[in-house]
Length: 247
Picture 1 (cartoon, rainbow, N blue to C red):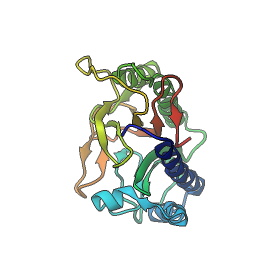
Picture 2 (picture 1 turned 90 degrees about the horizontal axis):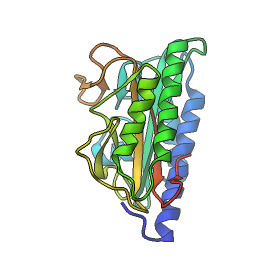
Picture 3 (picture 1 turned 60 degrees about the vertical axis):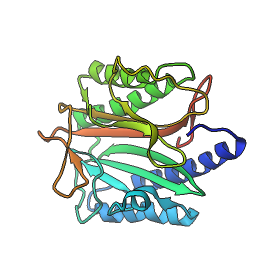
Picture 4 (picture 1 turned 180 degrees about the vertical axis):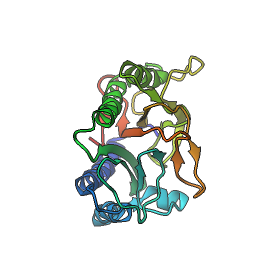
């Protein structure tokens, strides 16, 4: 989607605030002893309070209102009876729709402040997100986002999941431009333009570079049990600093 009016911008900022509120309430609820289903109910409660609809449920009939991925689950984890425990690395991914506009956001938390590796992984993924967003400007190549993510991962001793990435968003959950990779593809010559709406996602891994679908038909996980940390914001590209609508 390309923002073409003040109405578009305000509507996107509204749904952006809703999903960010849901994300933050879910993060507050992450603690040992809680189930991922209970966390999902927290997110659903916030969305319902605003009258927003879960995007994965409405668009794809996903068996949850949000995606909650734990440890070696990189994305699309199904909320359920899994009880979180000390040491888990937990990702919440919240996307929703209101009045025909969509926004998408995510964050990862470690249930152990003393675990150096896991916290470094999360910090790297978050810094990669913010650094890559800072390079999202009209006239720049789209693959600058992936180049920045990859460089940040490599500098910290990590790698990236190459078959996951960001995407266009706005009037649908997933729009063009698709395949906003976590690394630089020299063949990708697409340029960003002012008003373009993007969901920028970082998938930083301790080792694995690819994920595969689990038997449940949804969950994407690493084949070698590598840990993954994902962070995500929905942004509006401008001629200067991008507008982060899910901050």
